[in-house]
Image (cartoon, rainbow, N blue to C red; front, top):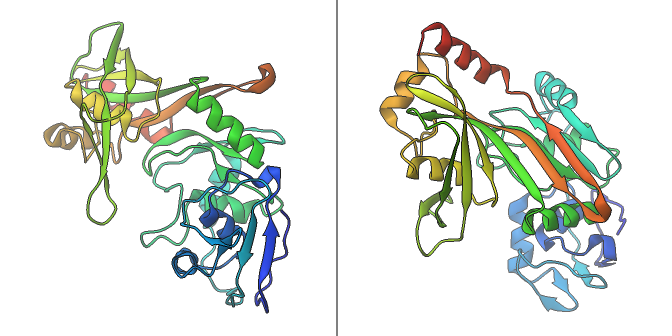
Length: 321
């Protein structure tokens, strides 16, 4: 599914989807085919029915299938602006030096905190946009899963459509072990503390996502294991058997030990107290990922605890907290 991007397209194009391109959403397909076109204009093309698949109208979440024919209308794109914001030099270095693993199919990055995985909401670019700019030689680069903006650690990206499907299958079929380090309020018991509680995801006005424990939600299981006790808090390893939105944060709060630094589900007084130790974000770090892939292949990567969170633990120990 190789096409040439021009700044101006004089007529309708019809693109046939091959097996490698099957499974991707039409909106993401269009964003790559029409490089530089704002996402809002892509959705407008879909709403107006100017983009068609096999002659019919489709919505932005439609997933392409092999042999689908996509009709792409003529679209005028603005010429690249040489003065447009580029990825800051400091972030460029952090991203390029943060590669934990790379092969011909996958790239695993130690995601820095404070950057969303996608641009939007007033931010011109996110991690995926930055990486596409930094690695222009890669014709395909997609997130295989997500981490919240202020969460650091292991993040998997696919360099081929087939690799993306393979990782999604491993996540869906329980062939993935994801472990996080997090600092919870209070003193947890030694050993393991399993939490099984269904989670229901809802969107508030403005697209803000909020998750609650509800019988109407989807099954979710988290196992918290004590690593170190710090008086008012406990450093734990959280292993998730499912990958629900905000799962660790909601399960920790449900167990009575909210994640420190969590402004949405956490404890306001505890967050205020831990800020004096230098905590400026949620204490949540994806430190280990183990994927069992097809044909017996395995991927095991670890990301050391980020420097800002290590400093919080050091400050807590110095104060005898």
